[in-house]
Image (spheres, helix red, strand yellow):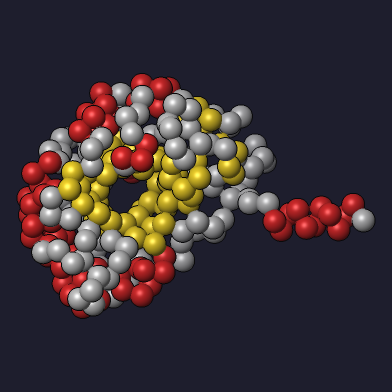
Length: 238
């Protein structure tokens, strides 16, 4: 009977892989995939974060730390995340590699949305490229949505001189973004399973959970990995 129980547990327990020492990585209150570079993304739900604590924080017996953070900046044509300015400046101060993202509203003019992001986000050397978070097609349909996000991406690249990253989930990607229209863009894919995102374009970041527990952050936080080394991460920064 004990062998049957062990087999069932092996199927049900999350297992993202094996570390170099032969043990599963456990950090942030869950099992995590075995990658060198880990990061988080935050918005108003996490409020003001003690980034000094984050910069020193190591989780689990494998001492997994936070290397980068994406911070929500704007949404639509006028919204600024109420904690963006604080978290944006504090990440820099405490040597967390930072990136800013815009939540795209497909029912709002794309140029106005780009202007909102540009107004509030001042990139510096060492910052990650801007991110477009797209998760819904809106009331005008998928063709209009794709036209709008392509315009946002173009305007942002022209302003900052760096190609933006596109964030979305696996299903939305496969349905709307896998076309050649978005060739050449890096992708950050949300996929809450133990397997890596199954997409036809190469992903750069993988959001693997939204259940992370990190000391001194008030609510659960989304967890991410970068697929390469720290040197490769720095290479895509501005």
